[in-house]
Amino acid sequence: MQADAIERLNLTRLLVEPEMLEAVEPDVHLVGTLLSLNKVMPDKARATARMVVAKVVAELERRVAQRTRAAITGAVNRAARITRPRHRDIDWNRTIRANLKHYQAEHRTVVPERLIGYGRSTKSVQRDVVLCVDQSGSMAASVVYSGVFGAVLASMKSLRTSLVVFDTAVVDLTDQLQDPVEVLFGTQLGGGTDINRAIAYCQGLITRPRDSIFILISDLYEGGVRQEMLRRVATMTAAGVQVIVLLALSDEGQPSYDHANAAALAAMGVPSFACTPDAFPDLMAAAIERRDLRAFVEKIGR
Image 1: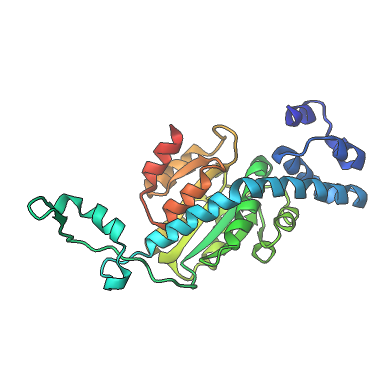
Image 2: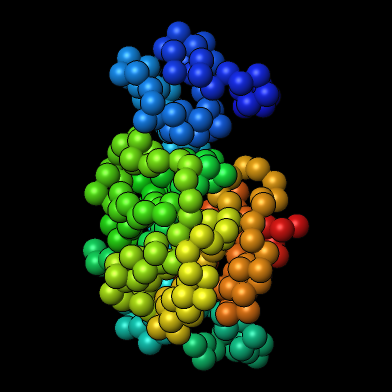
């Protein structure tokens, strides 16, 4: 209701006044509005705006951080499991469950044909994650959630996380991921869209294709070279990169998006769908384990 009132009553100008900012209830939509006004705010109002954004970011982190870390840690551990373990590395619970069909009634025991072992503990990076986020005006809520999730992912030693935002230009915010408020104030909502240019930059960040997950968060309205954009995605998938397109990362319903580009990506086997913040941790877990994401998409679509 608050977001609707701001739009309908043209209250945007009032949001640059500290007194107004202190009176409204902070939420994701308000943060999006503040970010779009970042360049025109007086210094005094900007200080208040940062406090509002920091409060919303802290609440979002409390909502998603623990679940995201738990889901990804579990996925990394499962992905690291080995099938020819030494005796001391055997995961007996999973081995027994996987071999129940080989139960020998006369001996009252299970004869395991396949051993499942624990992956050895490692401090090395298991997956490279590149978040490429469209910062056009229609993607405001997605930009906010992407900044928060990017910071959470960057805090995990098993992942190497990059965050790139774009409109007609491309900005790499990876070095600011330790502070999601700084990330958000580094964005510039509004303007055009050049997806092809953004993907070209992100290709340069990918050095281990088969261990990389590339997530494009965009409504796919391309203002750049469409065929080149599709060719780049095809090249990445052929190299083994797991490519996912999120038409929105927000609590809203079905987003507006370019259906032709989504269909072209789907034809390449690249899933394109809207995702809520609550579903994102499970999406990342599925991607890390390289599961078929079609079943995941069908599940969250129900």
